[in-house]
Image 1 (cartoon, rainbow, N blue to C red):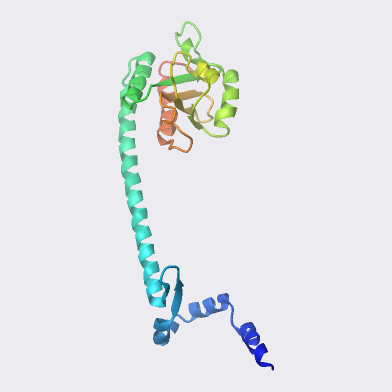
Image 2: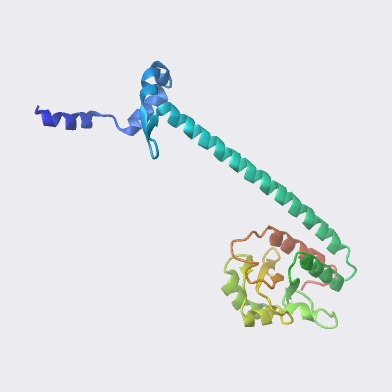
Amino acid sequence: MKPDEEPELLKDMAPDEQSVSDYLCRNPDFFIRNARQVEQMQVPHPVRGSVSLVEWHMARQRNHIQQLEEEITLLMEQATANQQLFGQLLALQSHLAAADSLQDMLERLHRWARGLGLAGATVRLFSEKWLLGAPSGFTGLGLSRQAFDSLRIQRFGRRQHYLGPLNGPELLLLLPEAKAIGSVAMSLMGEDEDLGVLIFSSRDKHHYQPGMGTELLQYLAGMLPELLTRWVSRQ
């Protein structure tokens, strides 16, 4: 064998990473039996050049613990926020249920939205699903499903919620009396998303944006149809 062939031969004979890993898993006392060698091992480090294997392992453990602490903190913050949101929604549900008419209930919902700094809250019901004609007095709530379909395809896609701006014709269809609306949060109501639309509006065009949370919308969109049936009959 030529001298320059020996390194290549040794390279071919060296175990691959998976074999080394399998061996260490089968022999967990390897590090105990070879503690001195382990302490002398050096691992590449992006800042310090190299560190001992023990230091490297301890650094990984510290990073892992820090990550766990950050995740726990985030979960606690989310739990607190969810608890506060649940309390607010429960109070709102009781407040709406105490209304003595449909107009009263809608005004209570609108005032609640105004209390959050919004322009208001609006409910539109698909005319094909509710008895809104005369003499009910609820014709102003009606919205043609056919007229809404193009907006739904453009804004909702396959989602139940939409958050963002609307153009002029869309605002005229959904909120004909509203003025200076910058952005909206909309949710389709009903298990099959075919009963109507709940709309929260803001004068700030950046207030509602895609990617924001929809837990509040989800809850209200599921709650309102049952309350509405106190005054409006379904077809």
